[in-house]
Image (cartoon, rainbow, N blue to C red):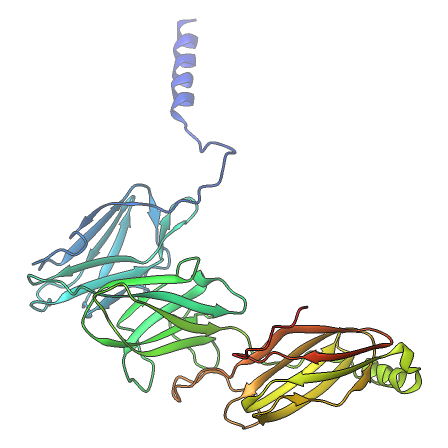
Amino acid sequence: MKRFIIASFLLLLVGCAVQSRPQGGPKDETPPTVVKMTPTLGALNFTGSKAEIVFDEYIQGSKLRGNITTSPPLEGLEFEIIGKKLKLNWEEGQLLENTTYRISMGDEIGDLNENNKYTNLEVVWSTGSFIDSMQIGGQVDKTGKGAFEDLTIWLLPAGADTVGLPKFSATPSKDGSFYLSYLPVDTFDFLVFEDINFNKMWDEGVETFGFLKGIPTSSDSSLIAIPYSTERFEFPELDTTAIDSVANFVDTTSSENLGLISFSIPPSADSVILYAHRAGDVLIDLCTKAGTDTLKTEGHYYAPGKYEVFGYIDLNGNGIWDSPSWTLNTSAEPLISGQSFEVKANWELEQPITLPNSNEDEIEP
């Protein structure tokens, strides 16, 4: 009997010692918090070869290797994650005098359970009595689909013909804003892109991008806007059989079953390539024009339905849509999209078209 009581008591102790994660409750969406950093952020006269960051919870960084950037370069940089600590070390005796150093880990550190990311994690110090204090902040001016957090911002030496590794990097926040501090007095070219193949490089011709060149660092809080777009000029998919059927309907039916539509296109210093389509079965070639006068097209009969307007401003007049070019320092040619109109049977309409940067009223869907 005594043995049974002792065994039961031991089982009770073991059962009490086993702890499990509570079931239910809200999902943890809070990233870890830094509670201690050595050297402290912005430390002066630091000439060591080790750094340590302590967080308030257990952390992970499965993709950290290969994603750490340093400026100036640090030879032999290694890291180790132990529980709540991230330890960094590098070869001794290589630090330059009176130089500000930065180790950037991007967004690769997250908490252990949900991998909520600590954004733009950095260790910054100076080997001298002062630290670089310039800054740059701003916004990614994005059009098209995609999340800001999937983008990468690189600061490159101004005037570089080719894109190599960045001197500094950052990730925009959820609203597209970004901020970099502890920068030297310098001028940079900014590149923003989505690293879709995760090779930590920018692959021109494969990955969408935007850029802004010749931006100096500043001691104030002035902001910049970097243009970036995932939109491209593409023809909609068209059903040839359906187009022929609709064309036959227009040719053979009474005008009372059609709408008589003309278009008003504002002046443009550059050629306007413009179309409209209805659900893949009607394509209207509106115009290719440039001029100082408003163009009013001749009225034509069209089948009833909702039509979408699409096209672009042909800035270089080559008859094709050109994406941005880092080498040529040219932006993407402006797209014409987001406009629609409806054709009704036995209806006559002069439809205005709005061009990018035009003062004309926008078309209501």
